[in-house]
Length: 254
Image 1 (cartoon, rainbow, N blue to C red):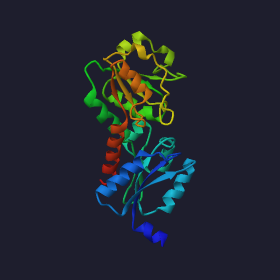
Image 2: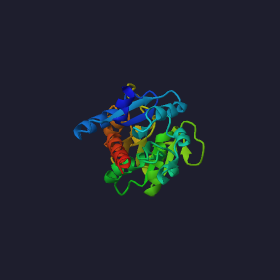
Image 3: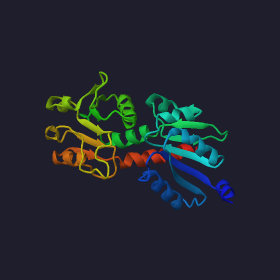
């Protein structure tokens, strides 16, 4: 009975680890309700290791239409898809999978779309250099967008590894005078650790700076609050999430 019920449904979902907090499940469940798609369901597939991905594909064979992929599997999922979209290849991270009619799995990156389209409307002329806080998977889409927009950037790391990376100690007043976009791609400040913030000299910030935090919970992180005190422009990651979710939906239905 359960198998028959599964065949009559169209499944979407999120692949990740410790994802009970997931934005995606809430967002898509609400979307399906609004669109009266009673045979569509969005599930969290919380897996302890990427090898468990194959079992999900097998279990939902024929009824899975699309998946989102989150931390820590955006890179390791490359080994489980049949084709990779050009943007995802260049970024080096997959966050969306489409199940094609012929059964093949195609990997995409919609974080690029989400970040670019939430950032460009708020950019000003003097916003031509950026600091990216963190070097993990989330920073890949951000640096890709900056390259596309011809915005110079440094990645800020606790352990810089190459010429494009600097340490937090390297962030001086002189540097901040030139680098007026600061994007937090680290998990620092995410709920429940809402008082934590990246270790930068906030007192050097001015109203010329734009602080963008990929975190959306809380809506105003300690990082953004510090920026607000210095009259900087601030933006959280919620619109980026909505945009990338809608782009995933477009891909799945194309």
